[in-house]
Structure formats: C-alpha cells, structure tokens
Length: 449
Image (cartoon, rainbow, N blue to C red; front, side, top):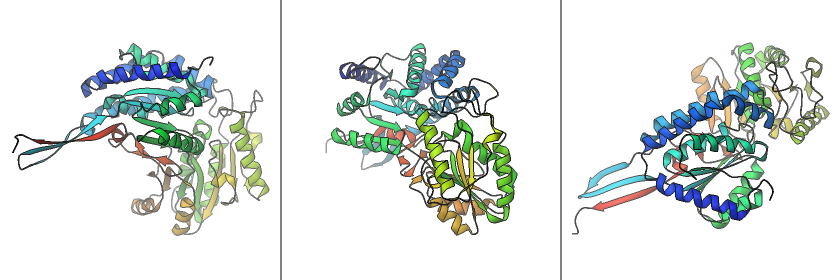
C-alpha cells in the first residue's frame, strides 16, 4: 500500500476513534470548546510553514493560503464554539400529566470527513469543529493533493492535548475508504467534491448504512446586476468573486447577468479589473493568480474557452496582458467572454477555474430565469442599491444561499447548504450541529401508575 494504510490499519484507526469518542461524549461542551481553541493556538505556531506547504501542494498564492487559517478557519471555529451550548441544549417540552418530556441531541459517534483540496483548511473545519463540539470523534480523509493538511491538523489537535484517536488523519485509497464506510462503524459521512464523487459516496454509504450523509458538491453560481447599480464597484466585487483562488471555489461567481442599461459600462470596468491580475509563481508575494491544481483542470478551462469561441462567443480579456509562466501547463490567463449563451459549457458546466461569461438581460423575469437555468444551486447574488427589490428577487432564486451586494463568502452563523446537484444537508450555523448529532427523546413518568 506504500504511503496508504491498508484496510486492517484503517479499521484500527476507526477502533481508536470509537474508543476516544466513548470517553469524549462524557465531557462538557466547555471542555470541548477549550480543546478547539487550544488547537487554533497550536496550529498558529506553525501557521507560516503550514501555509507555504499548502501553496506548494495546490498552488494558491501564499497570501491566500495564510488567509485560510487567519480568516475563515479561525472565525468559523470560534463562532461554532460560541453557539454550541445553545445549539446542543435540551429541548424541554412542557410537562404533561406529571410526565417529563425532553429531546436531547446526542453525538452520532465517529464522523468521516472526506475533504477537497481547493480550500484545504476551510473545507474540513465546517464539519470538524461541529463534530468535536457535539461529542463525536473525527476521521479526516483529505484529497490526495492536500493529504498532508490532515496531518497538520492531527498535529495541532495532539499538541492541544486531544485524546488519542479523537482526531485522526486517514490516508487511504478509494477501495479502503469504501471498506471503512462498509464497516458500519461510522455515524455520519461528510463529502466535499465533485457531483460524480458525491454520487459515489452517497451510494457507498447506502449499501450498508442508514446514517446521514452531507454532500457539498459543485456550483455554477450566478450574479444578477440590476439597473442603477454602480457598475465599476460591482465589477470589482465580481472579478474577485470569479478569480480569487484562481476560481477554484465551490461558490465562486461563474456566470454574470447584467441589465442592458449598464452592460457596456460594466463589461469595460470588469475587463480592466481582470487585466490587473498578476499570474505567476504562487510563492511570489506579487502573484494574485497562481496555477490551477493540475493539468486536467487547466485543460478544462482551455476547452471551455475554445468551445465558447467556436460557438460565437467574444473574448474580452487579452492573454497578452499577462505574463503566464511556462513552468507548467497548469498556468492559465484569466478568460472573460461575452456574446455567450446557455448552450456553451462556460455558462452551463462548473468551470472551477479563471473563466467567466457575461450576458445582458432586459427584464427581471429574464434575469431570474437565466440564473435558475442550472443543474446547480449553491449560491446566487443580486447587486442593487434598491434593497427591497433585491430581497424580492432573492426569494425567487434557486440556491442554498442568496447574497445581496456580496458574493463568494461563508458566514458561519448561516447554514451552508446547496440544492439540486450542489448537494445535500447543511453545515455551519446552529443547524450544522444537526447532522453530527441525533435526537433522542426522553418520556419520563415519575411514578408507576
């Protein structure tokens, strides 16, 4: 098996997690929270080296790699610690005829978290923090590209004084991962990745288990820019929303619909902002757009661009404005197109890279129809200074999260969830604790009648 565990070794890790969880479930929420906060402190001691390792693993610019821990990873952990007592409180139902009635949220046991490479810290923490706070043990199987991030976290937990087995990095291939799932010793499986991968995990879990599965899959997130919006300001936000992390974000902006009255002004501002990007070595502080994660990802972007051009799209960005390293074929200049339609992959299939299509619309109904014309439904954003109108449109958009005048952001106080092919279940917020716990009802009569 080389650097991977075989099934026997993997199942030993599951057994260690089970043993740790039996003791951990007896601890107080305050104790669990204290462990997570110590874990943050211990991770911080290695944050510089860890961030550089992440950049070398998957190619995001170093400042963005550092930002994962300093920003969302820490923020989400602290928020979940702050709300855990309330989220996990007993639900006391009014006594009826001397009968005490309570619903308690109990830990599910061992949680398997299969994490994606694109945000190697932000992706797993949504599940890890909630599970540890709920009284569960966690096994993290990270993507092959970023497998060592699971080791970074295992080290931080160990240095924070976590009981052995409470948080485990698991290095296994797909076949052994399937055996772990088939062992019937897990209480919940969370997966972040492709739609195809999500279907495989969902099927695998269902073969031997009746347990919850959380699936955070793809997105093709639309932005709708209404008339009267400040075109240049909105363009700056939507360039960042599309090209941050080289567009390799589940909730990146992947298609833009702009009211015809400000279309020309918007497109001009958008392309100018894109041309400010610096493509280069992600370890160079000047770089704002690093390479894609691998050659296949870069080919997907080149193929989408070629197909769009062949079908009559107009390329607005100029590759000549970027000095693209020839160090590998993973570097792709940002691509901006208009004169696009929904027959083109760039407007229909998840791009997960530095490419965007922009379309004009004439009416609100047309904008909503275009935004909803997708197999995905992770996030959608509306851009307007008419708050009431924006809220009315938000209600009509098919998405797990709708933003007004913001995009590509996770608020830990809100449920992170997707509809259609974007997934199933919810993480973060108080609702995120539901998937890593199960309700247990207590119907307690004081005396035997």
